[in-house]
Image 1 (spheres, rainbow, N blue to C red):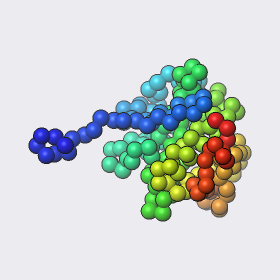
Image 2: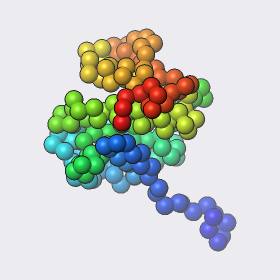
Image 3: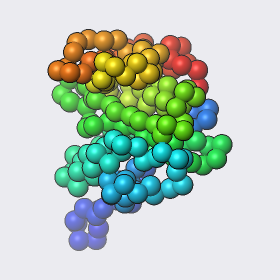
Image 4: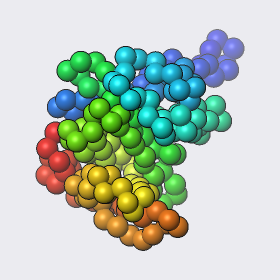
Length: 185
């Protein structure tokens, strides 16, 4: 609190989740704006930002702007530590609802696909979410997107229903840990 008794803004403290090969770096307001504008704020792999990055970044920016941001429940850039390049993004559409459920989305540059990065990143995000009050993680996916469905199933998601033209999958946190049930990281 400031000297005059008015709450003062705290410096941005992004969360960084570390896996065996990746850093998931929480996107700050300036980075969210750059990504929303289609500009990568860090060195990026070919093909990143991908087609859905801009809309995900706009969601993150709106959450921050309208004070609906909860630390950790935003967008993360997936940084490959071997070369320091951003290869994709992953994150929550919003904080958990009253039932403790939150929806995720993700995407990788084509140049980084089929190397296990998304399974590794998703397992880390699930570990963090379930350790921080999120009981259930949801994902909607196009039924024709077999690679994404495989990533979700590899990380313990199960199909619960169709959500319009999308499949809805769910991951329940009880008993979950990447070390015992998720992909190797």
